[in-house]
Length: 329
Image 1 (cartoon, one colour):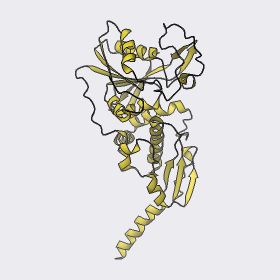
Image 2 (spheres, one colour):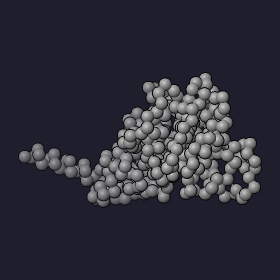
Image 3 (cartoon, one colour):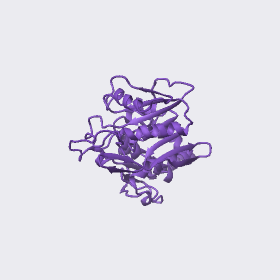
Image 4 (cartoon, one colour):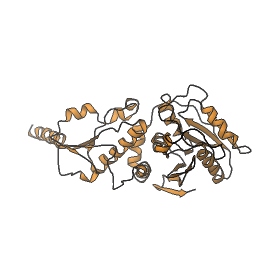
């Protein structure tokens, strides 16, 4: 009986005095929320403390809804201390029964450049397979998706246009287009150029990948938040004459707030992913097993032309737990 009571006391003490971490949201959409989650998931594993995940849109449709501690669990935990975090090094593992509160802008592992966080998290997921496995388990939607063609290299291109939510784009979509005459000083790509590369970027990277792969046949599928993916597909296809590339896209009912998790899941199944700096297609990179991912690290303007570069080609080697990075332009 005494042994039983002692065990109960030990278990209760562990529950009562263990610390945890939660985080506030930045008001962004799914991509920002998932990046925020991944950062705090890494911190929770790094310091061996519980993670409490706040509610956000689509959370209840992801597996993490069933596995992670929730806002209600946090309310029931009865922590005696609360500490706001600006850097994960502020966590003191000697302090017990404390809830740490981070946010989207929390610095992890001395990485202060926000644009570097997605690629850094991806590196961690490859270099630390247990972390990568946890992210796949928590973030992979349980969705039946269309079958991809076999015996051909598949390439997903995610072309973010704004979908009516963001401001119209300022840049010319192709270098040879006639210069715009309307006021283009306040487009979404002026504020967030990495999120909104012009179509020229996707065309260039598709043709670069085609060359890297020795001009083997490709199946290229256009994902976008635009209402007319078929028009984007036709424009890119027109620049790929005499190339052994099959193009495809969603033919109808494509809007920015529909098919969200379906697209995340389907993009993760392709051999290669060509994406923008948007965090939305990055989710597919985290849960996928792509042979290579292409994305921009910088940009500059030449008149109304938004020029992307440098461009990074990332090839994960999951057997050796490393990634190979190559600047391709």
